[in-house]
Image 1 (cartoon, rainbow, N blue to C red):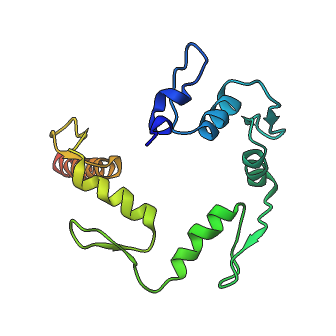
Image 2: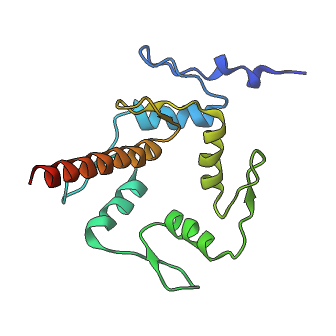
Length: 164
């Protein structure tokens, strides 16, 4: 049995400073085209956004033009990209089909489940500089900081009342 194609060395990027490796020649070819081969660049006339990918450019421009060609047949909302429409369609499903095997929480979207699963594996890397409480997500830390602000505001109000 020949396992040569399983060897990532077979598909190494030839550019000296890169040295990335790929499982197959298609991925290597895509990588070289995207990052190394100088090709036509698309520049947004509204904001200067630049990309080599025509499809990314088209979707980006729609932010400025307001064009939303992808329409949800259920509710009529329109979207700038097919991906946004596909993601939106999940909101119409009555059940939550993606289940976390750690805590049994369920989600409508697979990407939400994947994000949630990372909470079970990550340590709290977002730390409050005031009380050293740690959170797995930056949003948890942000919410926590608001509680400190509320405490400070209440304390300031009390001091103001006492002084007057």
